[in-house]
Image 1: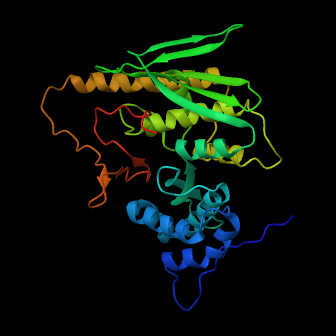
Image 2 (image 1 turned 180 degrees about the vertical axis):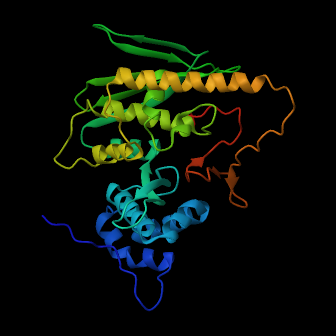
Image 3 (image 1 turned 60 degrees about the horizontal axis):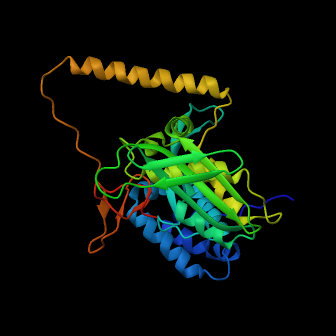
Length: 322
């Protein structure tokens, strides 16, 4: 079936504002949303997300392609029944090469929607096949055992007092309504190999990503979803999980080649760091990336991604707050 373009066109008389575009799209959002989510609430949440993340607003208003990408992203979120509040789902930006005949290539910002762990778990609970789903990050000072064989099981005792150390793995457990259980464990190396193909690789890096635990957990949920049964021809949970792939530009090389490329990149960074250490002249440290919050609001958001970060304290362990 041929698809029709439902995105509103810009009039020749006067530029259409971002707010007007969203209002014009209200009928399309209403068609896509499940009945229990009022379209007014959905649009209001989108407007709030744009206010919280000026980077997304700039991408949407800079070019017509940016505007279309925003409206398409919102339509996908509505189809999945997720609110763009930074907890269930978020709007993020990425750079896209634009090529037109007779013109030099250029890079433009585009908007995409990404489901968050809370949104994926919400859809899992509403699916027809899944009874429960859990995903957790494992730290080096936790007690953790992954047993295979006839009595497969995962045992995880998080350290409750003192520093838990660096993250070393992440796992997911899915209980199906037929009584069976699926388990998936990924170590840090596996996560970082996948992160290397992401449009936002720093989000997965414990040294750079303020909310890296969210991205680790989404990755293992995406991996385990490949082994789960689909309850119908149109499984909303599986559709939402597959949206995670939108954040990646998959490398078609064999995994061994990808791993070697990641190793060489890491070695290059270490060599660069060693060279810098030879110069003992004090230098000004870069300003840390600020985590902002609305006036009178105790919730924080990441200005780069629009994600809600419930705990901005550096001592908080990401990945355990959802």
